[in-house]
Length: 366
Picture 1 (spheres, one colour):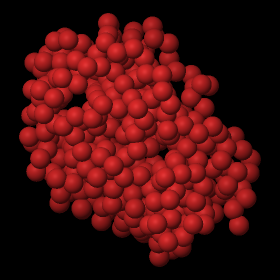
Picture 2: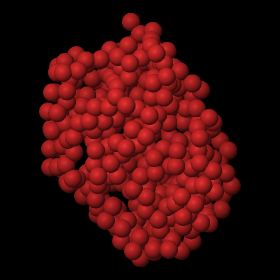
Picture 3: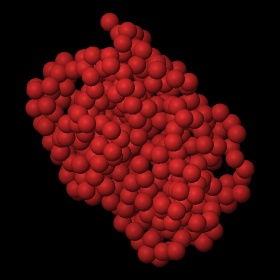
């Protein structure tokens, strides 16, 4: 069976990885990777090298991302991605093409495949993030897909409501935490030595709220004011924003923070999955508005301060503390969690054998 996997960023590649490794090892599948988006952007760390370093050799490369991140540039990148993939789908065919999540580049690649009858299998559909336009892109991808692998039964019901069809929806759990126990996460000593991180630290990731882009300037300033104070209490290890609308607004403010708190702030362009999981495992808590705080952190026993509305509507485990983009509220939330013990509750996104469920479904699908 010929299977292609669409990956547009460091984030989705890390989520795919347990499944990709299984597909690569199974002789039933002929696997090809289609890399595009920020994978090919030197501004975002050129993470195509991570795909190669992970042992995948059959890689198609499609460049379509503009450097700027204002509304016109994002819309232009979307259109350019559609054009590039129109040529690609005209020349390539597969039994299944796996797509994941909600990025605008992913939606563009999928939309281009509709006239060609490309059979898409969508992972992580049915979720809701009311603070990001990705919510619309995610549903676009679901509507264009013939097979669905949502993380929970509630998300499966939402896909059924969206598509008007209960068939071909298989609840699979979250791939990113599949086989977590067997992952070769670096030791704390190796991790700290590699990144020169000493003492207690918080792990931060902030992205813009793309539903209301005009609010990002104020949000970024409130974030800066809060982090200037939080950095006096604990070291901040910060992963940089993805290529979202107005992501550069947060990037600029984080660079300013780094200049003002050089000894207490460490900016990381891209950890890679295992080192990011190491950071999650050895940090005191998470702070920001990234989906990894919602989906993965509970499996590492970490509390998460989820800031703002970007993840609003997404189902949460009991480790999440929500707060607005207000400096004092963020500082208060940090004070609440900084000395809390390990979170010991469940992760609602965890399901045993996620990759196995997907592989078995692909093999048996008629």
